Length: 495
Image (cartoon, rainbow, N blue to C red; front, side):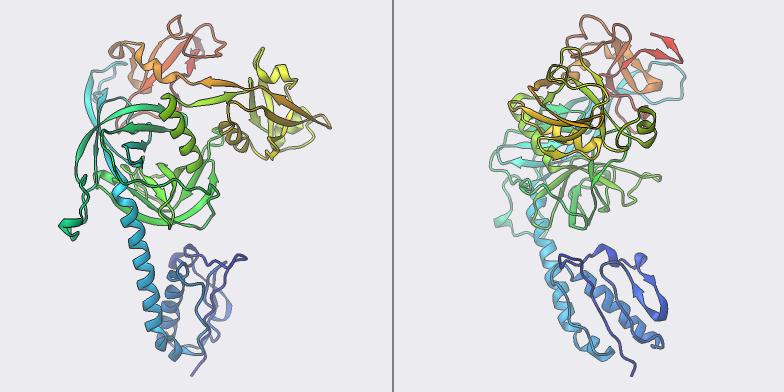
């Protein structure tokens, strides 16, 4: 009988990858070898029968699926050994199945459905720039992070909300009546405590206590390849669970946007927004916020806001009702090879000071335009997203140390940062929404005048139109405009 060798290869840390052995990703190599980077099967004889090849493939899947529960299985001597070890493999699969069920049972009671009633433009086929504003409904998800009723969700889920209701999850149908949660299935009115549109996070409060919660992960270092679970209300289907892995730990979907996300192949669909992404211990890894899709459904490209950002915003929104960040009075941009060549820079990567605020902390400390940022608080800054992440989480009451490269000289500066209050959410209270809607752009606007200037701290513009809100609904035009943007011209015509 031809011999059959099964081998599970592991990475340098001894952990096997589950994702890398999905059937669609297994590649055939020479002499009957089926190979993949981390976990694969080596079939030693290319003359095996079809039955033996099927056994080889089944054993491959059993090995891969049980990799998280068991580090490895002993190599089998031949195809008969595969059959003899089948009960052991089935036991491992049952253990894995039980572990996954426990994670879901732990997290699901703390995941809520959010139903939002608000106002948006009536979609029709007219060509006018304005439209009637009508009552609309939206559905998303949220996660309870404090037993006293504090719930985190996405800012875009509650955008334009006039009323927010939270539906607590119902227990499984087979749950004993005597152990069902006392809050199960309740519909509660929620109060919006604050939003931060830049990070797309919002904090809600319901008047209930002793609620189940999902703990935030202490270790912020999410690792590529980790198993994760996404729970939410896709298409209104409450408490739906999907499983995947962390595809990337610091993905930047938009090169012009410094925000980074945790990328996952766990299925996300409309309605998952605001729900948790959790690890195998049931700890919050991130808040699901968006997906990339050409067909409108999940294509394995989901993105979650990292737990470190979630925790920072949660603490600020709970304490102040807004997010307080530090401002250094300077603007940065990514260094590209073209920019480096044009400016004669010493390096072609990293972040560079591109603009300075007159009288700001950076100018007072001695920074100059064209300084290349090397490190902040002794943390290397290889890219603009790294710089923005460090600044975002920097405490407002601490001196910021920044190392820069000026020409060929390395220099260090200490900056006394100031707190930057982002008040753009207050802009939506200023205009008459019925008269300020620009339907073709899906935005509400108002003039840049004495009412608006105090809200937009540090603006240099003396004229223009300010975006004060964006419309909600399925047919919103994505222009890239955000609340607080100042439109100074349209088709090169000054406003």
